Image 1 (cartoon, rainbow, N blue to C red):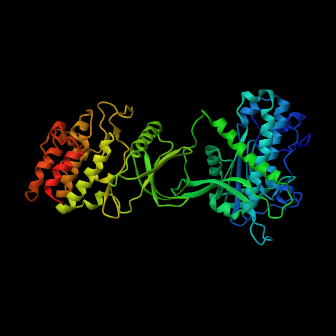
Image 2 (image 1 turned 30 degrees about the horizontal axis):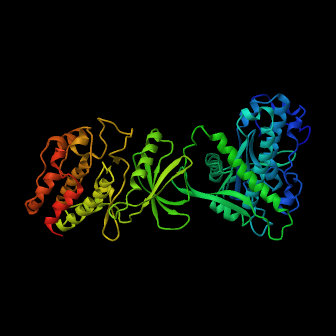
Length: 557
């Protein structure tokens, strides 16, 4: 680091709150922040470096539309600044300024925007290159920038005040895409550009993802592929963008030596260790802090499309990146006002559903937490739910076929002490082999479990299929699911719901006090079974799903 930086003001580098940088730069840098000992760029990249070329005159026309955008931000910058004396502050600010731009400029990047703790750089394609190298240069610059930041972080932590301030870390997003790039003011040492567009905003978003996920460098899969085989990747996932599209992203974990390289392997090991160390510092600073920005990012899955939404969760069709069958992800929406309660229900739903292994219960594969998102991966049913088959009255044989299978699924969940509490056609899924499976345990409750998400006097479920005791807010047991199944049985056999009302209050009252509806005369042999399933008093219903299945045996296959 030079002993006395230039005092010429940079119009794109805003002054710090502690005072104008012009004044700060006149001070003598503190020896605490000696020049970095990072490996030289020429040895790491196996190429000689050229000095920055004088910038040409500004041109109003934009460059080509495709470029690689690099956005980096140093975290805990302000807290560290506040702990420093004026001489230390001068040196620290200058060193951060230098490390944010040094690797990018050395690899022919151009500065588009600079702040005391962040920088936006652009890497454009050189027409003289046979193969575009802008993505490779951007990713290499990101890795080297993290390395230099970690050397500075070690010196900051070694100060006497180091233990009382959050650690220095950095997050970088790199994205190859379309942007508007225009030459503008010329600095003594380098050219600057003006950059806007979707790719710029995605690079900024990827920096936020890097910070929240504690991945030092995050890039899109396409950018990583364009960067060549020397850029090593780690964890991956799918990011939900603001326009409801998806972007596959990957963590950059290191730089691989070129075949035949004479650069010591220790240099590449140092780069990989810096990326790892930065992740540790980022996570340490976040422990006990606030949650992330509320974006959706799911590790290890490729999100194909959104297929549903309800309550506090979104439903996505997804493909495991490691291969395997298509799955459905039920994702707790990040940033929801009831996030904590929703998270509790998510954990409970997984805990309940994973204890069941039955052909008439949907399979649950895994539960995961990714950044600010929690999700459950479950079986995909391409034929949809039972609701799609209930647009009109079913053939009695088909209705009984479904009724028996649903009862068998209820028998399985009741035997391990679970009450579904929201049984309805939308939660009964169709398999390709004609079988049906009960799904969605979002409001299920274990009879021996003490939980706080619902209490006495609160109704949980769907009003058309709610049992009288649920409507009254009373304690429930497995027999409430049998009532809901009775409502579904009536609807399958007749093509209409047993109770209809103008308001939810009136509908609930009908469940409590109106008589059990009568089936058409053609189904009179089923009326006794329906009467017991839909009895207003739980004591008059079948004692269990097993008892219901036994009663249905007399009806034949």
